[in-house]
Structure formats: structure tokens, C-alpha cells
Length: 537
Image (cartoon, rainbow, N blue to C red; front, side):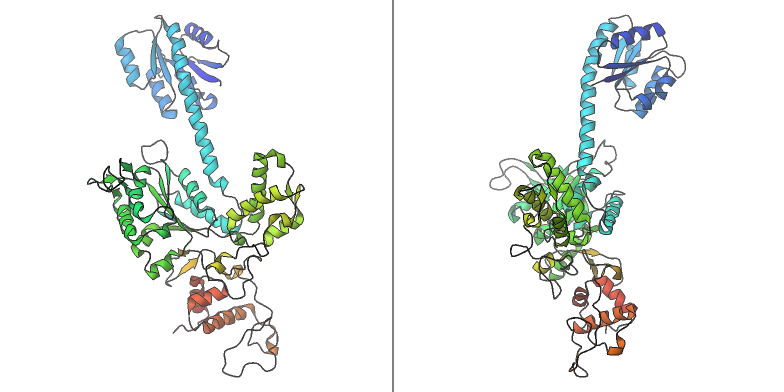
């Protein structure tokens, strides 16, 4: 490790002597300046690790140079040098922020070696910390969230907006979509609290994994002897996350009683340990995540409405993998390369053309987590460097049903795990708050415009023996019922209107079910009913 050293002294002979002494070790890189102005000008270009600075110099002087150096590089070690060996001068230098002080002619060269060796350890530690910070930022930054589909672009935009302030964020999405990864990206890219050099810790609470009777102690901590088994004081997650981020994973699993206590903690920003009497203040960003429809839980009375509005201040809906287009290939290739890099014996493994098509056609009900497991398993199973579709072990009897179908909300006609987008509107995905007049929320995976809808089937003439007049029209296997032979060419806007009206009629005015049948969100359904002047009375 090369240590870059500045020597700043208007005495050219002493500066030369000092630089000669400092330049002897091969790992030293010494630059000499004869004025404070020259040293400041070279600060950004050369980025020193250590500065030796004379106090008495023409121009801006040593003490003023010290002050300016600290403004631009507050952690830079600066050793003051002076021919005046008085205690007053040394004290003034140290009060000004100098790291150490050397008097010329008084064992200065001997002390110089000791000072340099001591400060080199400090420089090394500072560099290691800087490197670790860079690695953490890279590991948990936005670079780790792979994808350039329109759906992911919207996610990136929302994540960037969360960094503008300390908002309470709720990340919604199916299991395996990467909710914790997004939470970490928000945390590690956040601005440190005022007066702090860096953001605090990232503390995770898995609300589904902790027994209900221990959850309060986990959140708020407990005092020694507060209950059986409390042999020592326990610091709760809120205290641990002070200055950082508290990540509430699977927040939909919280017990109603604890929800009330969590709400109070979020409102007052203070907690009381179990068995304690004093209050403890905290300040942290709170990010929650869920794969449940919390709005539906609010309607059912299993999740407090006031806590919902407190946690869902800034909702971010993560799209399922089946709605991310070619992102699946980017992710698959990334997982393959990462695994091969860690296991060089599999160098040369690649996806065949047929395997690529299989990956694209599969619905990925387990989302990114399932894709990662599938690729890594295929690398091990494949007998050749080229991974075949059979090596992927997806589809067929062992396939998992799509998310919406498992949740009982898939539209009629779902086709199992294969076929991208077969889960329809993804109504099982948690809803996001939509600031519209209609009392509805947009599904996290529902299309938000007609451009996102699957194409309507081509209309065919109604067969003979069709339903009698007055009966509800029936859907044929290959067309939209109710179209006469002379209606084969119908404007697209009219087809949209008929589709909305028919779904609304067949579902007897139930907007939510009609929207699910059309594959759109409820808010979009309300907007279209108003647009086409379809009576909702």
C-alpha cells in the first residue's frame, strides 16, 4: 500500500531534508509544496493520506491552511511543524484540529518516524473502511436489481423517490420477487441522519418466523427478570435499528394485539421494554414487505386500518417475473455466470436455444427465487456444456401452479404453470394505494392500461340455435358472443366497451370480479365504466 505524503514548508532546505527522510521507504510517495495555496490546489488531484504542514508561512499561513484542508478532507491526518517549541503553539495547533505536532531541531527526525508509522496504520484502516463501504454499496445498490423491462423501470423510479426523504415504505409482491433486495437497496443508498457520517444498521424482523408470545420482546426488548427465561436485558429491534432501517418482513402475519403496539411506536417514535418503565426514543426508516393483500385483510378485520395507512405511506409493487418480459433471460444468464464463476469446474455451461425458449415460455410461479434454483440445478444436471430443456425440470406434473391460481383468484381458463401471463390479473398480489376517487386499489400485477391487456379473440358469426332473446349472451370458444355476421369488423374502441359491459353484466355488477375477468385492476375498471357511461346503479 503506497502512502501519499504532502510536505508543506516555505523553508526549502528543511522541506528537502524532510522529504528525503520520508522518501526512503519504498511505499512512500512524497510531494513537496512551499505554500499553503499550492498544497490546496493539488489536494483533489493527488489525494494525500498524510500532511506535514509548517505553521509559519507567507500567504495564507499554516493555521489557515489547516482549516481549509479540514473543510475539504475532514479525516485527513495533519501534523504541524514549527521552529517555535513553546507549549502555547502546540496547544493552538492541536485545538485547530491537527493530529500531532513536531518541533524543528528537537528530535524532530526521530519523532517523525514514529509519527509516520503510527499514522500509516490509521490510513490503512481508513482505506479498508472505504473499500468495505464501496463493496456494500455495490452489493446492495440498485446494480443488484437486474432488469430493464418497463415494469422494472417503474420500480427503479419509485425507489429513487424514496431516497428524497425518510418515508415509511411498503414493498408488495409475490413470494420470490426480491422484496428484501429492494429494501436493502433503499437502505444502503439513503442519506445518513443529520450529524452522522453514515447510515445506521439494517435490521430485519421476520414477522412470520417469531412466535406470537415472543414478538413484543423481539420488537421492543425486555428487562432482566421481566418474565420466565428473561435472564438478561434484551435490546429490541427498534433500538437496534436506531439511525438505520427496520425491515418488517411478512408484516401481514402480525397479531392484531401487537399491531396496536406497533402503531403507537411508529407514531411516538419511542418504545418501552417489556418489564421496563422508561421510554426509549429511536429514529429509523421503517420498510415493510408482504405477499398478502393487506387491503383485503383490512376489509376482513385482520389488519388494522390505521396501521395500514401508517405503514403504506409509500407503496412499491414489485411485478412478478412472468410480467417482466425478457428480464427473465437477463436474470437466468446472470445466475448462470455467477454460479460458474464460483464453481470453475462447470466452465462452458450455457443455455441451448430450446432451453432459452422454455425459460421464456414458463410462467415462473416462484418468481426470481425459482429461476435461480432452476438454473443452478440445471448446471449440475446437464451432461453436456449446452443445457437442454429437459435439464431445467420445469413444466409437467411436477410444476407448481401459478401464484394467482394457488390463491384462488385466477381467471377462468388458466392453463397451469406454463404459458406466461396465464395467471390473469395477478389479483393475489397485494394492492397499491391509488389516489383516485374510486375506493379501489390497483393490483400489483394488474395491467394499468389497455396496452397491457391480452388481445381480444377474433369475432365469428353466432352459430344457429343461439341463446333466445333476453338471455345473457354466452361466450363461444373462439369469439365474442353477441356479434351478428355483419358485425365482423368492429372498431377497437367498441370492442373494448362491449368487453367491459359484458364482464360487468355477467358478474352482476361486482366490479372486482369483472376486473379480474378482464385482467385489469379495479381502479382501471372504475375509470372505464365512467368512460363508456355504463350505469353502476
